[in-house]
Each structure stands twice: as structure tokens, then as C-alpha cells.
Amino acid sequence: MSRFKAVIFDLDGVITDTARYHYLAWKRLADSQGVHFDEEANEHLKGIDRMGSLDLILAGAKRQYTPEEKLALAHDKNEHYKELISSMSPADLLPGAVQALDACRAAGLKIGLASVSKNAFSVLDSLGIRDKFDYVVDAATIARGKPDPEIFLKAARELGVAPEECLGVEDAVAGVASIKSAGMFALGIGDPAILAQADVVIPGLQHFQLNAY
Ligand code: BG6
Ligand code: MG
Image 1 (cartoon, rainbow, N blue to C red):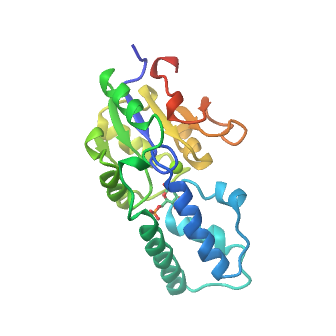
Image 2: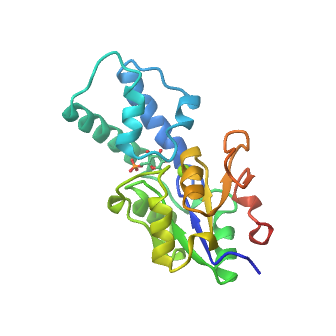
């Protein structure tokens, strides 16, 4: 028996390694603008929406950008990102991801997805797992991205479960902060030194054990 009634997953970096593709696409953009950007800087971008991420990168630029220029750069990044994910298939599911989803289902829990990515539906379809979720938040309907709790609270509300009965699963610092300020239990995926605010951290979903949290 789990003490939770719902599990709400992030997508990028939790269920599939799209975090890598986001990084590669931002890296090319940063290089094209002469802005320093590396894996360490990328940690701060994880979980942050497209325009927010661009602003963080351009904070290191030598000049100011107009709103039109920013939109064009964000568009280019997204086109490159879509190219990178175009050949994704169920083989791109991270180890343990399907087993974790199935374990939640078998335990009778509701399953939600809370990703701020506007590409989330297409990634879920490429992975062939859209029907494993009871509710997927449409990122276009979210006013405030992570670390704001809005997206996790919306998922909980739509699933009909109180926040304190939800387990949130995240690989990003901003995502864990979002889960905690929503009043949920946070399972971090990655490095405990980075995801210091998470209640428990595991290296990947192959270590997911519903009854242990
Ligand atoms: C998050 C990623 O899931 O989605 C971020 O962690 C990304 O890196 C954000 O910027 C927005 O994604 P998209 O696909 O809408 O540009
Ligand atoms: Mg993520």
C-alpha cells in the first residue's frame, strides 16, 4: 500500500533523456551569440520554460535583444530541438520509466504529467506512452512556470487528489522547488547534492520503489 493517491511525473530528464537535446539546442544558440554556456549553466535551465531559459542565456550576452529578436531565437532553438527529437521512439524511454508508470497503475494510483514543455504531447506520442497518464497538463495553459507550484497544483486538481497525497517526480532544481511549494512529497532524479530540496533522490527510475516513500 502506498500512502499516496497520485504520482505526478516531469517528462524531460525523468522519463526520457530529452534534457540532453534541450541542452544541445541551447548550446548551439549560445555559441551563435557568443555567449558562454556549459553543462553547469544548463542545470539552472532544467525545468525552466522556453522564453525563461532564453532570458537566462542572454543575460550573459554583450548586448540587449529586442522582443522580436528573442522570439526569433526561441523559434530557431525549438526548430533545432524538434529536429533532434524527430527520430525518438519507445527505445528512448529511460530505464525503469515504463515499470514505474505500471507500478503506480497497479497500485491504483492516479498518474499525471507536469512538464512545462510545449513539445510534451508529441514526445509522449513518440515514446508511445500517452495512454499511461490520467492527465497531462497542457503547458500552454500555465501562466507561471516552475519553480512556481502552479503546474503541479493544476495536475493534482485535475486528478482530484489533494496536494499532500501526491508524489512529484523531478530531475530539475526548479521542478523540485515547484513540487515542494505545492506541498507535495518530492522524489528527485539525479544528484542529491544538486537536488538538495528533494525528500528522496534516486539516480533514475530503475530505482523507483513506490512503497519506500
Ligand atoms: C522543460 C525542460 O521540461 O521544458 C526545459 O526541462 C525546457 O529545458 C522546457 O526549456 C520548455 O520546453 P519547450 O519544449 O516548450 O521548449
Ligand atoms: Mg525535467
